[in-house]
Amino acid sequence: MRLDRFLANLPHCSHRQARLLLASGRTSVNGATVYDGTQDVRVFDRIELDGQLLQAGKPARFFMLNKPAGCVSATADPRNSTVLDLLHEPDKEELHIAGRLDFNTTGLMIITNDGLWSRRLTQPQSLLGKTYLVETEAPIDPNCVDRFAQGLYFRFENLTTLPAELELLGSHQARLTLHEGRYHQVKRMFGHFNNKVTALHRERMGPLLLDDTLAHGHYRSLTTEEIKQI
Ligand code: URA
Image (cartoon, rainbow, N blue to C red; front, side, top):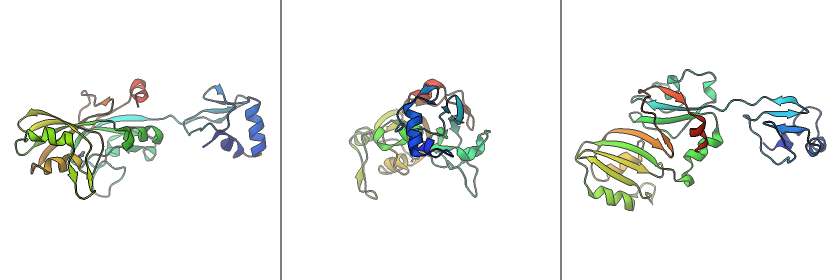
């Protein structure tokens, strides 16, 4: 919400009074005087008027979780346990998942209450790479490297996938980096070559790398540096 609207929503403050308060430098956001009423303020901002607190500002929260297999990446599910069940945090209903994984996929999952931040991480335009370790039932056809780099046609969506980088690690194992997130994308790309994905693990989302000291089902807060990278 714009700061001038925030002020005008206060009891006994008209739009005109809000403009005057701003022009006279009596309002501060996160400790800095703000004159520009068009500036956006969020629930995470601390807003003061003449040094009196108007809004304390909720803490923004960011977690990285090593998702175990057999758990749903949703905030609620009638049958199965969810990734949120693994978090021992207050006010969990305020949290959301940035970039889902399938039921049996393991690895990096980001959970936060900051929607603007998570949008930067997941919006398609950002083209941030997501890297997966893949294990397959049959040996991986080496032609996959070029074909994934060229893009594969997905008939259902009538689109060609963006160039993806495949690094072969063994006959049945590879590291794949995608720059988009289509439904079951990794499984469908290997399915194109009649090869079934038997294990899938997300290692990285953009600059955020899964902390390898986190056991399956464990989580930690992101560091200030990690948060700033998005
Ligand atoms: N691609 C898949 O097929 N499954 C996932 O969980 C993530 C990417």
